[in-house]
Length: 407
Image 1 (cartoon, rainbow, N blue to C red):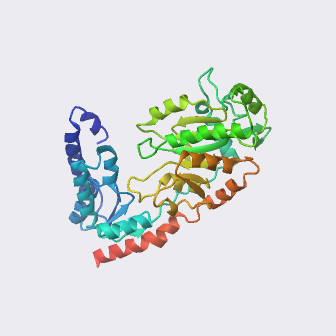
Image 2 (cartoon, rainbow, N blue to C red):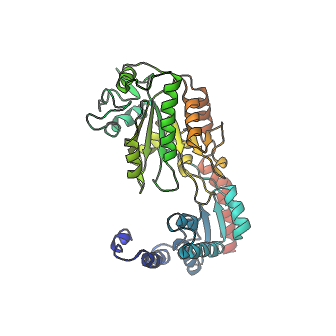
Image 3 (cartoon, helix red, strand yellow):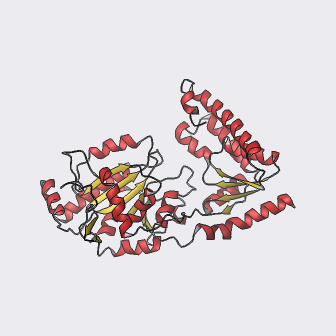
């Protein structure tokens, strides 16, 4: 199935949407019914709903097992993003998702808002099971930070002759110095004039509007210049030399690292290259599964631009950030408050201007006197582990479903 889409490139898209799920249905049903030992219960995450939800329901019948659906979002709302509200495929997908979802012996969901939606409009009773970060998401030590930045030195560099506030003066690429840390003898120190590191992870899809972030970066750059009463004609390279020589300003340079792959990446990279900024730089990169948690654990602030297709799910990327003790500025939507609590573990914004205001407020006098940022960091440390969430919420429902099926 891995190369299935490539072999169907010659088919019209409507036909592909019909044929591909049939193939997946047969292959997955064969695996669940013949290749694995008979389970007491199947737990299936939704979405995807078609054909996964349908297949697992059939497999649970054939193998006389219970079925629990773990609702993370609604598949039909994701399909709307690409096909539109009026597509007949969306209507069919919605019916299948609702019909087979109601057949489950039990359900989990990721928010109270989704729990209410399932109860009122789908006839499904669900237990709220919040996502929690794995244990390998944690604040990074100073040694881990330095080693990570050394490994990322090539990704942080720009082509020869191209400079910004981070690359000016050159990046050594060695193990002695990075934009954030310096090795003195056997001791690693954080630089006093280091830039603030801000991370945003994305799949570069239409449900995340990165123009908000780019506009906020421009506003931050211009507002800092206005606060410091710099002339519009102030030479950027003069400023960069002062920064590189160690001069501190009341507002720091910002380095945004945006991780991930996706269809809109090149479009936004072109927009980033067109920006003319003095105190803000961007890097886009793809990180290994080992380095991504370390990056979150080394950053100063996270930014989340996720807006749910249903308005009822929560971004897992923020859960991971909190696991690393990383406070977050997140786009505000209906249920995000169940995860991001304003002025406790993060801030919410609706416009680029609001995000720019938050950056100015949080990062003033960075890194030593950013009291609000430090307060949010203390609140961002995850207080409940996945093991606790499983024991308190998931295990009771699982035991109840199994006992009813075997009783």
